[in-house]
Amino acid sequence: MNSPDNKKRETLSRLVDELVEDLFATPDQELLSEFTDVPGGAAKNAEEMRALFGGSVLKANKERLKAAKAGAAASRTSRSAAPLSDLTDIRQRFRRTLAACPPEVKLTLAARNENELSDADMLGMLQDLEELGIFGPEDRDGKSS
Amino acid sequence: MKADVSVRSRAEIEAAIPLLSDAEWIRLRKASRYFGWAYGLGADDLLQEAFCRLLAGSRKCPSHVDIVKFLVQAMRSIANGEVEKVENSVDSVPIDDPETLDTLQDGLPLQDDSMIAAEGEEAIRKSILDLFPDDGQARDIADGILAGYEGQELRQLTDLDETGYASKRRYMRRTIDRHISGGKKK
View 1 (cartoon, one colour):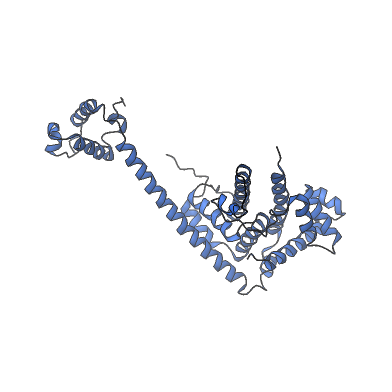
View 2 (spheres, rainbow over the protein chains, first blue to last red):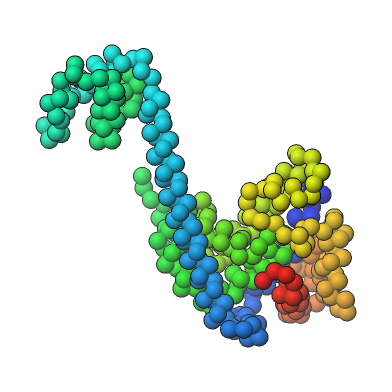
């Protein structure tokens, strides 16, 4: 359905499209001459626009960093929210994973002595192994991979 | 995952844009002003948003597409989206205080002296036609564009050949340029 607001937007779109079409149809030299009466001329305009783009690069970098931080925080939250009810099963899987560890993977003796680990130690160890790619989240959740 | 080779990478974009020619920068500057004027958005805000979306990859520029044309289309789409967002907010929230409008949307800031702020299509038409008080052909072309006529139909409307039409349209664009430059916005 076409609301009055939509119709207004469509009307303006048509007008701006014509203006833009002419912008691209205008030869470079003619466009440059349109800027001769602007202080600093086309060169100053280009300089300002490059500065605007530079600002956009910084802004995009900040957004990317923010997104990465949010992703890391969400990942930590997701890990800490994992169910603890199937800890026995997780310990069994942990033992199987350790047994299958390649020799080049270094694990401390304390880690192998599972009975000395508290539940918190165990979860911390699982997270470390996850980060190393040795132990997947699906294993920790007790689901077969 | 295999990279999509048909799309410009962020590194390519960062390298290509600063190398645009003075004329290309003028096209971007003017296009941002047209959209800003029509839709009530800051021209620089609009262009910066287009740059950011391109850099962030939320808008992907195919390698074969001219980057300036792509940025102009991105601005068009962003402007439409911003105005639509505000319209939807206004539809769903009772407005007692007109200032509330400024706080309803969290995107680009809107400006009051825009064409989109005009009350209805007829007000928009009058504002545009008033830019060409003494030029019947320009008024006819403007009227035709606003009514939805295109290319050949517009030429027939004014009895202009292709060259004559292009020349008149350029005159209209420059008139609108002067009008925008004389207003509050850059």
